[in-house]
Length: 256
Ligand SMILES: Cc1cc2nc3c(=O)[nH]c(=O)nc-3n(C[C@H](O)[C@H](O)[C@H](O)COP(=O)(O)OP(=O)(O)OC[C@H]3O[C@@H](n4cnc5c(N)ncnc54)[C@H](O)[C@@H]3O)c2cc1C
Ligand code: FES
Image 1 (cartoon, rainbow, N blue to C red):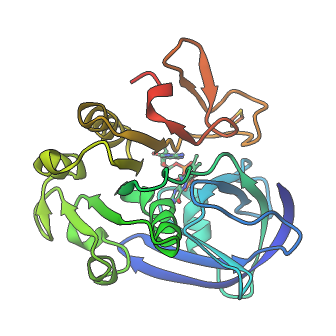
Image 2 (image 1 turned 60 degrees about the vertical axis):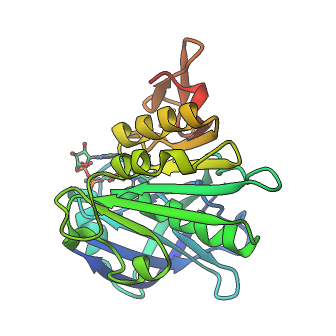
């Protein structure tokens, strides 16, 4: 982990309320990996006081840049959405644990919901480079929220909208149920998105005999293991810290 000042290379609107922000990555910092995250100070004054956590959506080693896909939700992300090329950001990262690679010979089934798209898109890119077969599902409420317009569908991603305005009508979890019989223990499920979607993926993987890794995007305070603000219930009793032991967990380690 390293704290450094990054320069914004671009901040591009992707869909209603979604942006992709690209920034320089310090050469002396460890390299970003899918599932790991960073925290950013979104303002030079004390409001908001806490740094905000975001997952990496890409890393370009040649350009020396990292990216994130974020949704404007509140004050912090509102300030981020107004940043421009050339502005600077105070970054700490990379933090947390990455998604593990699947065992040799396994396929990957990637499931993203809403703001979970960034880390899952980064994982898809990384697995494809390693020639690991990837299927990807993205779910959101309605077509206007689909980031990257048509490019997601062009990459073979199955799009699901709750209202049926694009692609499969229903949630990503509904889609998984529709393909359940075609998935077996040779598949590893990776998921990031809202808690009910993660639970559906965990249960789906349990029924199909697959391993399942989930990234839990808990609200965080310190981001470095000091406050227990991000605690999630562990399957064996007690708690785990999403910021240090996660945010990626084998879904069997968690209490659902
Ligand atoms: C490890 C990790 C990775 C993340 N990666 C991404 C990402 O790639 N893209 C992205 O858009 N967001 C991501 N988030 C969520 C992001 O940190 C929050 O959306 C952001 O902090 C909200 O800040 P704000 O000041 O705009 O909102 P606030 O004003 O603080 O809150 C606005 C609304 O957002 C909700 N909110 C705040 N934090 C979270 C959270 N962690 N998860 C769910 N809802 C939250 C609040 O409950 C409230 O309803 C990630 C969170 C974590 C912990
Ligand atoms: S956010 Fe403080 S321990 Fe995880």
